[in-house]
Length: 501
Image (cartoon, rainbow, N blue to C red; front, side):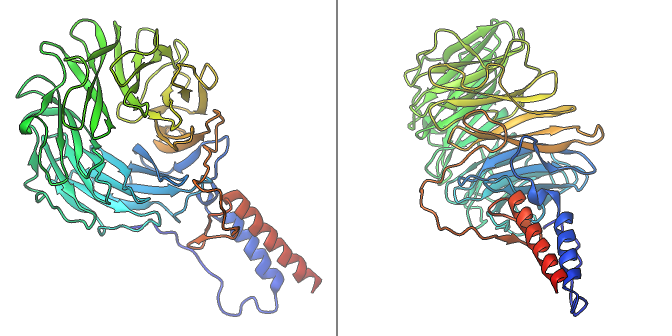
């Protein structure tokens, strides 16, 4: 379902004999085109959606070709919506697409589908089910209006199966799969597979082979961080079907996060049993624990939190966390063998510059060039980011790059990397002091705000510099502002010819 725009069109013979009138109307129409159609990357953030009612919990997903998807929840329109932006930062759909409807939501999550589109999962308080929808780059809904009911529980996390389908894990002990055709090959929505009898803090990533790796806090079989792999057929394959216990007995773990690693995973968590510690563990594709039993100690302090990993691409991880004593974001590098690489943690933000970070993944992402990028918000309502390489050298200004200065940022920036050193952030801001709205900004590999940059895999070009129109209002290439300028020049030319006649 699309939010439609009502437009009047010129028809009949009302302009016959009056080319000057047609040209004037054409220029006015260009000026009245929706601003979103000509957003484009610039120093100013892109307003993804600004309107009545609160927008919340945005997600940003890289499309693999220089563009990005943004999804969010709209409490005024009571729905989950999505928009796609091309390499120029222009919205490619005439208006946001409504992915799902409902009265209230606990959360919605989105991931790439592996074919240039996205998969979106959300829960609906009307029936307390989790739904999933697949959307292609043209904005087509693959599974009909309203999506597919996958789980009879709420608060979903989602991973792609790599073939256009998704594996969905609920906060409440169950998991299920939707295939690329919208069918449910493992179980119906009322009888999903049970991975635990008492869980919280759930997270999921793809295993790269049609299955997924499930992470959660376990409270029944043991008290601690639990991990399990479910294969493409829906079988729990590690530890004879029982979850692996990653944290040590007697510890107080919380807030686990994970990244995939060649069919296994690297997991990080916080331990507050004796002071505060950031812990990490690696598990291979066979479910074998690779590092010290109970986890490797990455950092210690008196008030640490919100740790998050990014892959180094070689079996290790960069790990960021917040030090609330100094209001600073730090990072450390642990290699494939579980050895701490840097002599001391590296400050990503200046001391005292941290107000908050987004609670849920991802705010720390791989840069695609052997390093990582992380984001935060400070007390001046600045959304900021920093990039760091494998040697521990920060690559942007030591204070971090200011992506935007807001009025009252209420949902801190999430990131999506383009794999070429750049990234795009989304966040929520009370810009007008009344409603929460969604904003987006890019940053290049060099730390320049605006265009995140993109180099196609092949340097060959079709040489086609023409325009592609979406509906009747949005010019996609060679860029929104350039497109509008060309339209205005064309209209002005018509007007000049008309005057000569």
